[in-house]
Length: 174
Image (cartoon, rainbow, N blue to C red; front, side):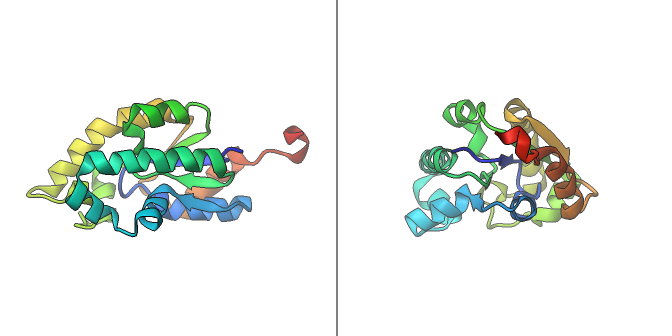
């Protein structure tokens, strides 16, 4: 069993919007690794970051991603930092990975520099977001099999393009 598509990208790229819509379009089940962590621990991502630190969260995240990759056959969305660990990057190599890319202006507008996003909290969230993009975009590109720029595009437009490339005719599956 393997996900049809694994969605990665920075905060504000559309993972939580495009992922479920893509799954629905393809007639598949959607799963979010962050939601798995919250369900398993009974704690919010922000609380885990604040109380246990980023390293503890990344360990939980890698475990959640490993499990989801092994048991989920629909569309799987990963937390923005999931591909940062080498183990997760290695596991993603065997999967169709969709990188939802978002520019600085659109990302800032979409996230509203929310304090619910632990890595965007701080004195200068815009600079923090830029630094996050600078560090992560090369990692997302390393794991991606498909890259879609989401700036100035609706979720429906993005999903239509993705679905066209991810739908495999029944005779090709056999």
